[in-house]
Length: 147
Image 1 (tube, rainbow, N blue to C red):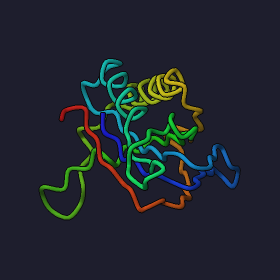
Image 2: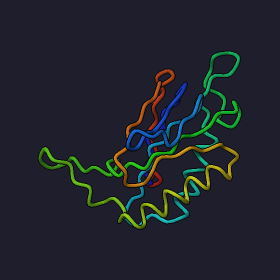
Image 3: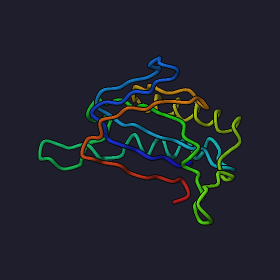
Image 4: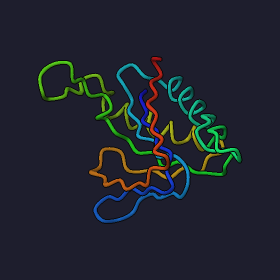
């Protein structure tokens, strides 16, 4: 699985003019299931993200996790993280999981984040979503379970 994680002061996701999910301070997690991914990758990624120390402590150092600071997560499915740009000018997405698998793993991942004690808001898999965020830092981190 691939994730792009942004430390945010606030974030929201809207579909057809209706806000589906919104958070205050925490993490915006854009997530993509890749071909061959399983629950094991989702478990690993959720555990890693929940413990990722990218929030400032009292000394201004990135030393606290989203759980440590009482933050939440907005999780948005984004198959375009699977983009292959090695050839030509049009990205290919053939390495993304099939929609059924992608949706199943997206829902599983959000459940695993919740199980880590993180309040989770989310978008709608496969929908045309509008995401708003106020990136804090900015802090943006790429994670891949293949790493």
